[in-house]
Image (cartoon, rainbow, N blue to C red; front, side, top):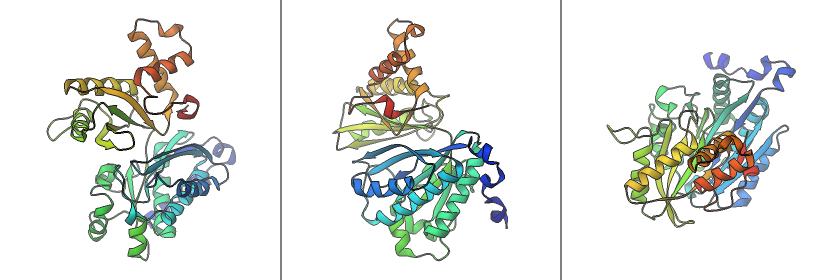
Length: 348
């Protein structure tokens, strides 16, 4: 009875006038970044929902993962998220999946992010409702994480994803570790195909990879531990509100520090860049450039541009927005691996 009351669709409580102002963003990560036909089938399913604005599709070959960004009303976004995850479960077989990025299912993460006219708490209720629907109608087990977490230990995405897909059977057998929502009639072969999905609600974050002048994964992992908030056991890292790991990306032939900045007010993008550079130099290495995954807030680039302009002794107030954005691109090497097109990569 608790869930029956909890999952009354929020949008039914609003007038049409208010609903038009309520906008959320969804940034699902799908465990396929190599077969563009599969990716297109998923994005077609998302775009089949009226009122959806598909902003960006960012596939990665080495990670074998695609980050998709779309916005719309709460009703449209939740429907599009369901259709995209359902299609992913049909066209991705996790038993055959390999990639450098940690993952748990065909749709690995499915976060709802408040943009306007809606709170994080309301997005959390919607995320729980979406997770329940995915389990019930699509047969996909779901954890709820961050603001949507139903169990405190699973507020941390890393805890939900512990052991990754390979630990799925163990998790399903353990009441303390199993997903929050399970299909009514659990088909083991179907679940092994789809894996689990983590559905959550969070504020905007920046997903960024820092390129290093080395192929040594151990170096990237060490720098990640230096800077990420949780650091090492007994030794916190230097950047608050960050999560980071180190890996080697074969398609680029370099090691990277892969980071999520979960609060850009606490740790702005350019501050994270400078700290990763400093830590790399202390270990005898350099950051050669920056790779943004998905979209980046325009204000983050403007803040970075002002910082780099001021760093060389110029006055930021005299610079145009276009100049500041170019300064950010050059200052952090955003086009080091491939062209960085602000009109395609910025939001806000």
